[in-house]
Length: 202
Image (cartoon, rainbow, N blue to C red):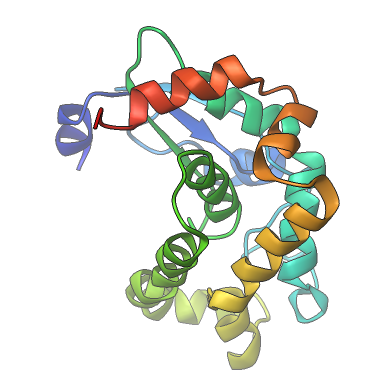
């Protein structure tokens, strides 16, 4: 898939994983070779289900999503700055599974573009379907890591209510997405440039 991704003009890959995940799993075959790899951890802790140091039976992902908003200002600011650049190239941002940290950042971007919450939540909920094949492929390894069926189902799920809760709490705690972004250093000029880059003139 490297040639396909390169053909999309992707020049930078923002890696939202923790230091521990990066050290264990590396950066893959696209970032660092075809595109620039930019490591911007969204939270300090690992969120990989393969991490043996975490008791996944006690993890509450709704709380973790809010931790991402509280701790991830620098990473979110970096992604928004890239999307708002005057010389704009396509970028990718990712985590380990592509639904939790990636989902929160994607929700912020989409909200900044005026996408309705119902569409954002629907987009987020598709992650569970799209991850199903990978879950089947890695189920044996997940079980070896100590996860039972209920923990695997929980960690790989993306129910609409989880993202709805996150967006509602964002509004309750910061007032709006724009207010939150301003609080972490993403100003109105950056948002104007981001919208210029990502929205079609109409």
